[in-house]
Image (cartoon, rainbow, N blue to C red; front, top):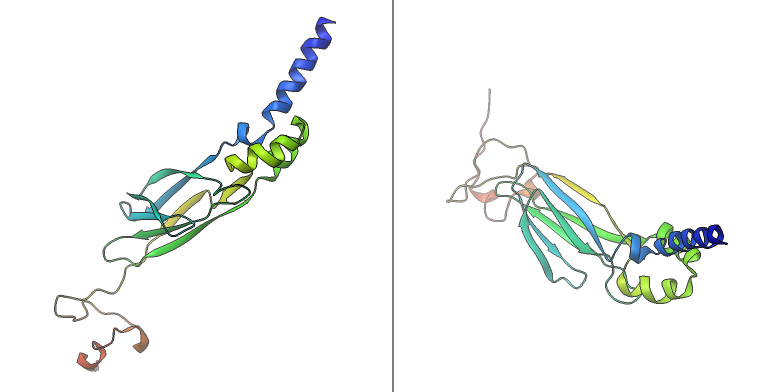
Length: 171
């Protein structure tokens, strides 16, 4: 009888640990890095509200959900002086393993309909790692003159600057 009770306790504890809220939690860590380092990052939530402001590299803990049965989504803007700004979307997908299978083992309805949807643990954020490779941007001096030598399309030149350019012929 003692062996049966012990075995039953193990099975119940494994089932209890299957719930997404217990295993995954309501937050997820997202690693954000850039090349070059020390780029400024701003993270905006689903309703375009800034929720994070820091610099790379960083590990950010973000909420998986945004209300009952509602997934979270984020917009990450990575900027650095003299480099092009990058914008990356973080979206959510169903945490199929722990949410579906875990709640099946646990007994289901409370985990499926209450605990995981309220905590947000039913969702997984993607991507989990962001590695931004920043490209150098065109640079202009204080007078609006283009610095350096670049090959660009006419449409990429700011309005008003194109009229001040001089044609240079190389023989």
